Image (cartoon, rainbow, N blue to C red; front, side):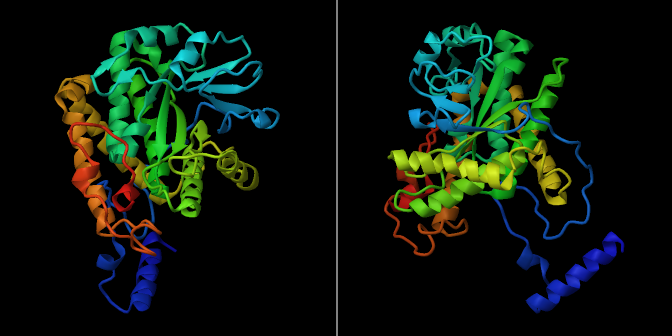
Length: 387
């Protein structure tokens, strides 16, 4: 049976179910990313090759607790802990990083961003200190803030490339294989898979501009943007889906932010980590290199996201680069405009947030003007409008 026959049969079935000949206006859904999503796919125009990751399988990263030492291989550290041998350690504190002297068998990764987003500069002394360390990855390019502030997917990736380019211009192209990208994964399940895949294409393309052939190291963490203070159970469901997106999308490491907003308990930290364990050990989705490869839908939106992100990156470079546009407030304004439109969709229930704007629909307590500032890149949760 040809693709034309398959499409025709599908259309006939849908027309019968929807009881209308004009099915496409009903099936097509808007999105704020400007990505065209078809209701039915029979092919992809340019099939992608398999998109590898750096790690053989995705690291499951837990916030350090002594009770987990025997069971967990990868930890995120905010304070010094002695004798963590043969572990993957993601250092999240610049003072701690300064005191670490890794042994040859140790695997240390820096999650410390050397960019000052408020001032529009790079902390050169900190960057040089980190580069002098014998870490697996020395410099973190953090765009998790941008996602949590409301940046569009293509904005997040365009900014990640622009920040990487700024580092290359200061420290040389060899820094590209010393970078780790900290990326927050939101609730748009398939789009977030495509986001990570698109970034692999984009970073590889950037590295080839310098005669290299690099794969980005991606540290993916769950977003705070779609979480609510009084909605713990739904937060847990949302973050599980985000972890699945990250693993299927090919992240090298995943970390679950606590599903409790603005507080933490030992029990909530344990449950947050066990979300990863269930997905990895029961679904085994952390071992596949590019699990969504071959899906017409994922392939198509991956390529669309990559094209939009690269276009933005070029625009940033032609306008003077990321740091210059931060100083002028251009980056802040671009993120602000998208974040405000996104928040309006929340208020109008075009984006559904169960337990917040639907089932039940809570009363609005803060205006968009109360939440956002066009001169600042600031993390804002959608639910803050109702809290």
